[in-house]
Image (cartoon, rainbow, N blue to C red; front, side, top):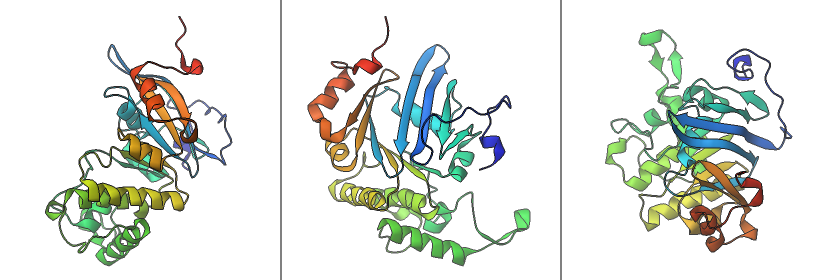
Length: 276
C-alpha cells in the first residue's frame, strides 16, 4: 500500500494497529462525523475480521450510512482512526478506498444506465490496449472476459452483458453492482440495503450471492432492516442508535426481539452506555 495511505494528513507517524492485522480486515477507533452542530457519528469503535459477515442495524438516521461514507472516504471524517488490512489509512476519496480493496454497493447502485455491463464494471478503471490519454484505445475483449469471470464468481446470471443497464430489471441491476466487487478482487465488500427495492425472487438471488461470498471467505458488511435476512446471512450484528454503537451481538446469542430492543433504546450493552 502506498505510504500516503499509512500516514495521517499532518504527516505524523501513523498509529500502530491495536489488533492482529492478520485477522482484522477493518478497524475504526473513535470514528466521529459532525455536520455543523449535528453529531451524526460519535466515537464509533468497530472491527470486522477476515471471512466474517457483519450486519449493521439501526433506525433511520442512526448513523449506519454515515459510518460507511466515512470508511469509504465518500466524506471525510471529523475525528477518529481507521486501519484497513493491517495499515493505518487516510483515504483522500472513494477511489483510493476502492483501489485499496473496499468495494461498496450503495443504495443508489451508482450505475450508468446508458452503458452495458462491462462498461459499468470498468467505469473509471478501464483496461487499455494503448494508453494515449484522451486518445487511448480500450481493451474491450479483456473487459468482457473479466466481466464474465466476475459474474461466474458470484453466480450472477445476465443473459446478455451487452445490454444497457436501463433495459435490465431491478434485480439484475443490483446483481451487476454486486458483481463489480468480485471482478476487482475486493478485500472487503459493503452492501447498503441491497434488497430494499427488490421482489422475493430477486431478493433470493442477491442473498445467494452473499452466501457465495461467505463460502469464498470474503468479509462483508451488510446494512439491512430485514431481520430475517440478517439472522440468515450474518455472523454478528452491530446496532447503531443516535450516531453511536449501542450493541455488538453474536447471532447465536441473540434473537430478533433482543435486537429490536437495542434499536429502540430499550436496552444498551453496559460497555456502550454513555457516562453521566
